[in-house]
Each structure stands twice: as structure tokens, then as C-alpha cells.
Amino acid sequence: MDISSFGIASVAAITIICYLAAEGIKATNLDNKWLPVICGGLGAILGVVGMFVMPEYPANDYITSAAVGIVSGLAATGANQVVKQLSNNESDK
Image 1 (tube, one colour):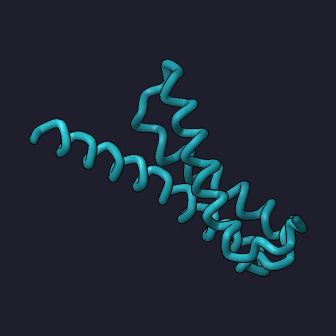
Image 2 (tube, rainbow, N blue to C red):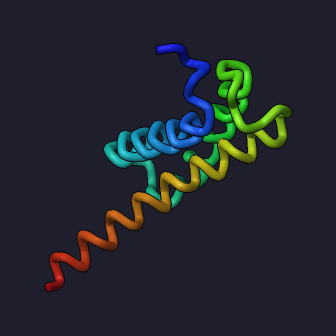
């Protein structure tokens, strides 16, 4: 499989990588309030890297690729909260 065929799926990959990084950070002594900042920063880095690695990446400059990465990284914390809230609602029933 050629990596250039990912296209917009690379944005989802950034979200998944940031989500997994956040889960790993939760296992440390670091306060969870820093998770959105870490996921956003990691997403920005991965967004810029994705611009160079994937020709079909949906951004062509540093600012836009970093913004796409930040939004993808912050989506990981949002996905985490959705899972957390849904599991809390299931246990309340």
C-alpha cells in the first residue's frame, strides 16, 4: 500500500495517534488537565510532518497543516470525552 493514497484519512490517523498518546500519558503522574494541550501540540507536529510525507495531505503550507493537526489532536480529547460520557451514562442505568 502506497502512503500517498491516504489523502484525508491522514487527518483521522493524526486523531488516532493523539488519542493513543493521551491514553499513554494517563498512565503517568502528569495531571490530566494537560492532555488537550499535549494532544494539540502533538497534532500540530504531526500535521506539519504529514504535509511533507503525504502528497495528498489537505494542506500546502505550515500554518494550515499545523491547524489541521491541532484540530485533529483536539478531536482526540473530544472523542475521549464522548467515550467517557457514554460509559458513565451506561453505568447509571
